[in-house]
Amino acid sequence: QVQLVESGGGLVQAGGSLRVSCAASGRTFSTYVMGWFRQAPGKEREFVGAISKSASSTYYADSVKGRFTISRDNAKNTVYLQMNSLKPEDTAVYYCAADPGVLVTAIPRRYRYWGQGTQVTVSS
Image 1 (cartoon, one colour):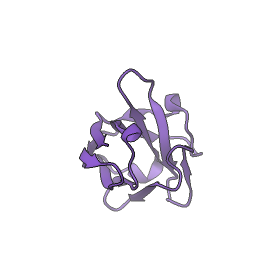
Image 2 (image 1 turned 30 degrees about the vertical axis):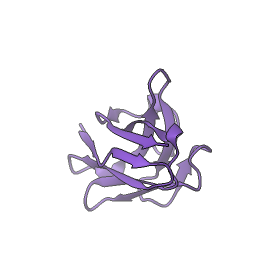
Image 3 (image 1 turned 90 degrees about the vertical axis):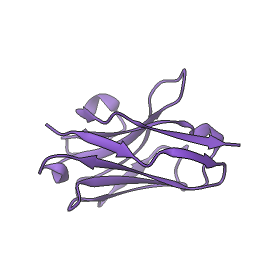
């Protein structure tokens, strides 16, 4: 069982930056692929990016590639999403998720555990 708690969301102007964090409970954090997803009002949940267990590889959606960076600190049981050059269309609730599988994936059903989400609002 893994519990995930996101933090760091808020309101930021277009072009600005924000970092959201996801803290995990338990001693097995390093055995999970970690992913970030987002959901805007009236839209389906969307893959943002994911990071492998050892942080050796990352995978991003085209919509955020070059602007967002995922990192993790296994000693602190935390995964981060650094968001730069934010756009109004990045406005959404951002969720972190944990996948016990082997490969980094964008498929939501592969992720077994989910956080409650944190709101990110980008004003124009």
